[in-house]
Image 1 (spheres, one colour):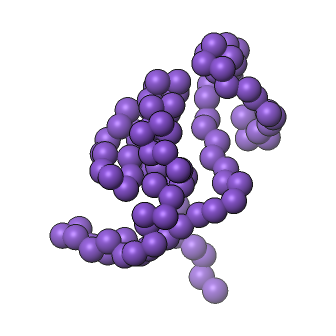
Image 2 (tube, one colour):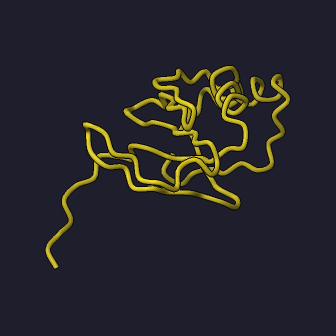
Length: 115
């Protein structure tokens, strides 16, 4: 097998939520992410470095979506999903304080080996 072409990064991460407005408000208010797109079935948030966090209304994404840009295959996610944001090491304490101020309880932290 030949070597795989380079991947420049992860473009999108999806979470499936029961209350789209509430979830979007959390990521906008607490994490400061900016909404790029809003629809009844999804909110796309700018997650920096060309990354996008997609919040989908649970149960509203199983059908294919076809538009002028192409086809997005139906998808869905259930159970305990995971997303992690990269933050500068120097900002870690400020993030801990901001999350505590917003009432977010940290259930775990990871010292990522790659920094």
